[in-house]
Image (cartoon, rainbow, N blue to C red; front, side, top):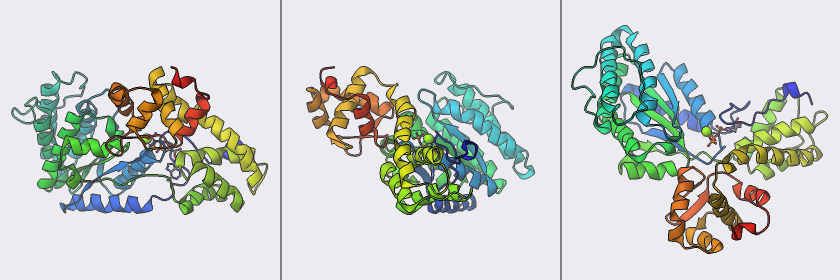
Length: 397
Ligand SMILES: Nc1ncnc2c1ncn2[C@@H]1O[C@H](COP(=O)(O)OP(=O)(O)OP(=O)(O)O)[C@@H](O)[C@H]1O
Ligand SMILES: [Mg+2]
């Protein structure tokens, strides 16, 4: 069918034509943010889930929702290797400049901007990557100790006070939060704790891989009391159906029921895969309705496309030994697997492989659901590993 009108959009962070199955969580977060704005106790939300389940698009939708409700929002993504203060400072500056244009909040927002100047100046020694425009002279003693944990708390407190008199909330959206180093994560949590104790309307809505929950708990033991960790996963059947059918129906195109069932069976309801299958089904079909036979053809193309993009970008970041480790996991099945079993497949000791395993966790390829267990962070990655490394060569290295 007409490629120009193809509504499906597999991609990283690409908003889907229909954001299916996430209304309840959007409402939960809406209520949490409204409560925080009023100074009522409420937990911040850190969404956790595997690659491609829709964390980023949901985070962006929540930000749009919050903007629409008159909140002040900023958004950032924590890439590997950049410091949290370097990411936060420029965004916070923008938010504070905006707040300073509100009459009631002007003085307090300007004070927070002074705090930001002190913060950046004092932390530059430790975090060389901090670069932020300075609008006002620092206020000596405000957020300028040079200790991230102390200074971030002071800065958030100052920013929270400005948001409060403005009658709004300052909501910080952070994606890929699992990449933030533990000491910096600890500082963030402790700063949010301070705001929550003082009933200040400043909070974080975050997203990350499943290891985020453990990392936050390690960073600060009280993180569990401060955050909810809703799990974002594959869509339940009804929602997966809606994700496929609705965008097509909007363009007067229908699916045979068996066609949709087949897509759901093959994708297991994972959002990225639904978009990929939807796109290929549309390309293959001659006309409405899209049939089960169309899906049979589309599946080959969808798998090939995933192997070239979604899976490939992950695979290409691996060292040869990391590839062997993941291939050994794939040999054992979808997982999770005991680290000992993986090591045994490779004829190595668990302790000898521990640094490699830690490296893979750091890269976001695997995570540990329980002590000693190892699981993929990419859905259906086991099947891909077997396709790309067929045979038994991986055992030899
Ligand atoms: N609720 C949904 N319904 C239908 N499609 C969705 C839904 N959520 C996400 N998608 C689609 O799934 C794909 C992946 O979404 P997104 O990039 O947000 O995932 P992610 O969890 O952030 O992945 P990663 O961990 O790799 O960053 C996109 O193509 C998006 O359009
Ligand atoms: Mg994402």
